[in-house]
Length: 264
Image (cartoon, rainbow, N blue to C red; front, side, top):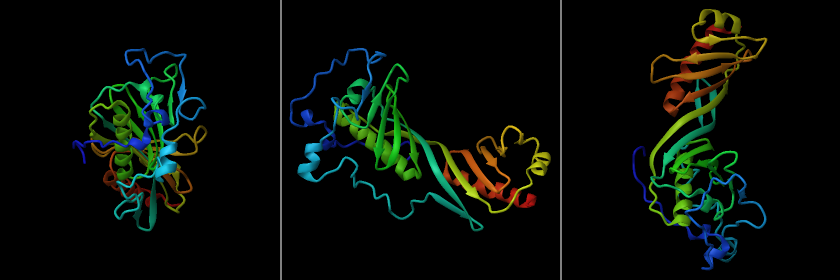
């Protein structure tokens, strides 16, 4: 799905109540959305709620989007190597909607949104299906975190695109999706001699037990494959920095083969 364009369909049930009834809400799009005194939280009383009336009348829920079956086969958040399971905890992904976004308008038009430009000049939107958090930038860039599969990440970005198109009526497209980082962990179930590992691989390792209990292993066999691995004496490891599940699996297998050599 990389580098492909997707037309984003509308979802009218996401409209706030007065917009769904045709009353609308006047927003000056030429205004300054950088006012540090303005703070919009979709969960606050007196601001926005999405189409609750629509949900009651039509049995449709904001979080019930059946476009993607999240339980379909082939969607995995676990990898297995020699009986050791690697669990993916978080995928950080990015995409571009190819449109300039008026963040204030989005913030006052949907729920589960937070916008406080005095702290950070981005819009925060939280979704429940998939469970994730999105940072929306004015230039149309999306940073999505909290998912555990690539399919969920794509689905979350496209759902954000639907919301923005529905509110702004702009021509929104989904492009340049890519995974920025994958965070995973595993328990190798073998105690590790960290001191010896740090001595033999000192060009890759940083181990200071008086400051941090884990060993930091900077894995970089090639310029395109690099990762940072936290290794603990109990055999538990945390892997970060991979940009695909395939690369994550390679790193996991390689570091496991190293760790078994330092079993205590």
